[in-house]
Length: 239
Image 1 (cartoon, rainbow, N blue to C red):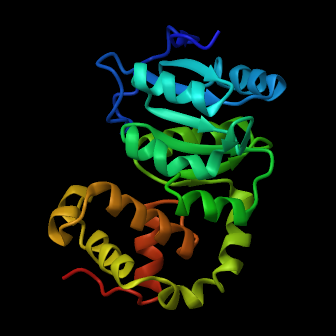
Image 2: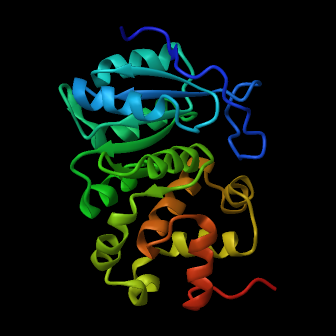
Image 3: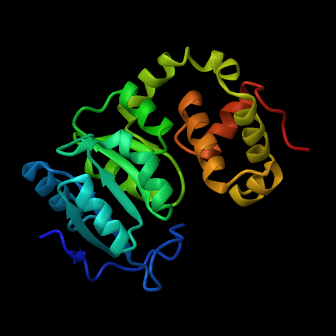
């Protein structure tokens, strides 16, 4: 039951214009759902079956241990990870997952979504956090966003996260020196790879700084983060 990925959608049109860099040559994206609750797992499968997520395969695991075996045996593009699992905490498992399987974007999908959970998840390296109560369109959008390298949050989480960081006015004080450096380079139009080379750090480290910055600024994307930073004069306009 937790073996090779099972194809759920076979006739979706290719999404050639969408920035999904790790799909197969035919445009197929591989999703792994890590969820032990049969009802919630069936809900996710039903939601994604027939949804416009481009061509995709879908597999599931009921435990972290099973998920690690599957990630070792197959290349997955996105892992939809529950918060509470029989053999561990989903959030605490994220650093190990992304270190061992850097090609897989981790998205926390939980019924206990809160701004505290989202902040903790992203600090541990998850690309986002969404609620199981979100609409289908928001879930699909989150999958697309994290697969494309962005950060995704349930819209209901953003206000609480902003208040937890003291609001947009306190953004500059909340950013670390390194996060400011990365943000300035993003504003200048540099790519993740270029920023990594410039600062002599790994691309994964750059992505972690970007994710933390998005949380602190209450932004949904790098473009929005740059726009907020320029508006609040956190960074200077590019020359």
